[in-house]
Amino acid sequence: MLESCQNAEERWGGVHLLIDRWLQERKELVHAYAAINSSPQAPSANAEALQHFCEILVDYVSAGHFEVYEQLTSEAKAFGDQRGLDLAKQIYPRIEVITEVALAFNDRCDNGDCHDSVSLLDELKHLGQLLHERFELEDCLIEVLHNAHQQQPAPAL
Image (cartoon, rainbow, N blue to C red; front, top):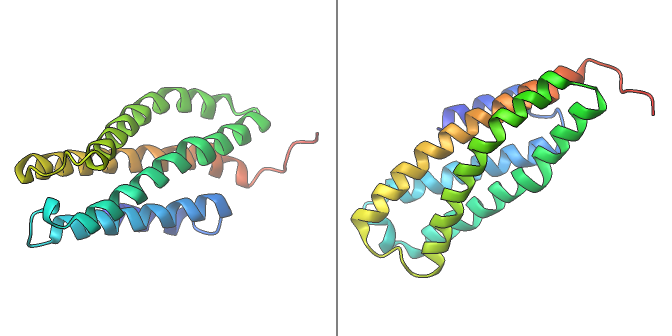
């Protein structure tokens, strides 16, 4: 998961400040996830690390939905990129499903329902797989909705 995060930064880092910030937050999310999974104690015993992970998780998925995706879609509309907009319509529903799982995980932890170590480990593993999928989908969106336009002159208003 960390490798794909680094690859995304190499491909799109510096292209747009919003994407740069978001990719940096993704990297922090991956590190927080790794810290929970690499701890010799059960994740539920490391409440501070789990809380930190959940905070970054919520920030990351929120930034995606309320900032980055909106910006990428607006850019595609401005350039009349129907192919990119069609791709976004295909990808967004899956990203939304993953977001719901992530937010439900956060809600359970906020409510103190993250005490069962076995269940928590299983949930974290599943969430990690979903986040990896999400990162790949987001990278595809950035590639198609942003990079396709970076060599084109901005449309006249």
